[in-house]
Amino acid sequence: MRQQAQSTTPNIIKEMQAGKVRPVYLLCGEEQYLVENTLKQMLENLLSPETRDFNLTNLDGAEVSVREILSAVEVYPVMADWRVVVVSEATVFKRQQGPSSPEIIQSAAEAAEEGNPRKAIALMVKVLGVSAQDIADETSDYRETIGDLIEENEEGLSAEDLEFLRNLPQITSQIDDFQHISGAADDTEILIEWLDGELPKTSVLIFTVKGNVDGRSRLVKLIGRVGRYASFASLEPGRSRQQDRVYQGVSRKFETFGKKISPSAFNLLQRRTGNDMHLIAEAIEKIIAFVGEKTRVDERDIETVIAQSSFENIFALTDALGRRSVPQALSSLHSVLESGEPPIKVNALIARQIRLTLQAKLLVDQGELKPTVDRMNYQSFADTVFKPLADKMSNHLPTAAQVNLLKQNPYAAYKVIQAIPFFSTDELIHGLEQTLEADVQLKSSQLDPECILEQLVFELCAKPDTRRLARNRI
Image (cartoon, rainbow, N blue to C red):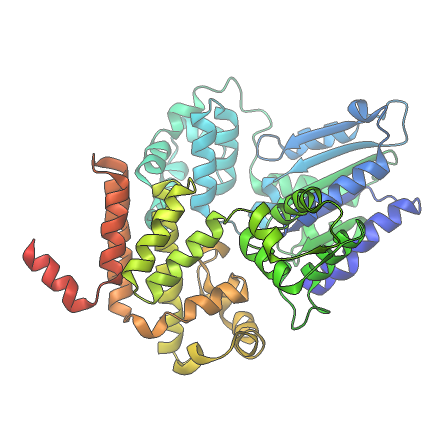
C-alpha cells in the first residue's frame, strides 16, 4: 500500500493542473498533515475564491448517510466548472478498516453528551449492524448484539461508556425520525452502485479518512479505478539525510527563505515536535521570523523558539520508568504535568507504555525477538528486526495502532524494547493493574492527582522487594 501511495499521490495535483479531474477521490493515512495539505491544494485547483462558498460543501461522514452525500453531489455548480463535496471520516470506510469499537463508542458517547443524538445513533448503527428502529424497540437482535459488543470490549470501555450503551434506546427517543440512518452494509452497496453507474461531469466527491483503510476491499478498489485513492504513510527517518523525506522537506522549506538548518538543529526540531508535520510546519514559520537575516538555523535557535514539548517530556518519563530511575521519572512526571497534560491522560500514556513493553516481552518469550535485541543499535534494529517482524506479526497484536507495538514508529518501538531486561512479565501485568487502580482513584477519589501519579511512578520504578517492603509497612 505504501508504494501505491508514493506513486499515486503526486499525480493528483499534477493531473488537476493538467485539466484531468476525477469524479471521486479517497485520501487517507497516518500522516494527516499530508492528507490535509493535498486536500488544500485540490480545492485551490478546483475552486476560485470568488465562487468557492457557493460550490463547496463540507460534510461530517458520521452524521450523514451515503444517500445524503450523493444528493449533495447532484447539485450543479454556480458560475463555476466544479462543485466539490468533501466528506470527512465517512463511517463506510471506518467499517472497511475494522476500527476499534471502543473508539467509535467513545465518539458516539461524546456526540450524545454534546446534544447530537442523531450522530450518536448513526455511529452505533454502524458498529452494531442493526437498525435505529431495532435499538428503539430493543429487539432481540439488538439485545444480543449489544451484549456481545460489551463483552468483547469490556476492558476498553469506561463506566461512562457502559452507561451510554445502556441508555441507547432512550437516546433514540430523542430523534424525530430515522430517515437516512442506515447501516454500513447498506451504505457500502449504495456507494458501490453509484460508482458503477454514470458519474457526474461537474461534481467532485472527496473522502478524507484519518488512518488507513482496507485497500483490498471492493469499495476502495472501485474508487481507485474510477477515481483516485491515495494513502499517506507516516514519514519515517531514513538511513541518511539524503534518504530522510522529512529532513529533505524541511530543508527545501528553509531554502525558499534563503536559509539552511544544521543536522543537529533538525534533530532537536524533530524531538520537540514529536515529528508531527503540523507542528513542524508551524515551527518553521516561527523560526523564520525569529532568525531574521541569519542564514543558518542552529540548535540555539530551536531551543529559543520551540519550547520543550509534552511529547518530549512524556517520552523522557516512560524512558525513566523503563530504566527504573525514580528521581528522573518523578522529574519527568512533574514536567509533563507542568506542560498542561491532564493527569488522567498521563496515566493512560504510562499504561500504554507498559502494554507495549509487555507485548515486546511476550514476543521474546515466543521466540519472535532475540533476548539480546535491546543491545542493537537503532538502525540495525529498524532494518533487520522491526520491519520484517511488523510484516509478520503486527496482525497478531491489538487492532488499534495506538496500542500495537509493531504499528509504532520504529524509534518508539526501539525505545520500548530497551526496557525488556528491567521487568518480568508478571511485573508488567502487575503494572497494568496499578495504572487501572490509579485511573479509578483519579476519577473518583478526593486525593491530589499529582500525589496519585507520584505514588504510581514510585511503585513502577521500585524493585519487587522494595514494593513488598512498602506494602508491609502499610
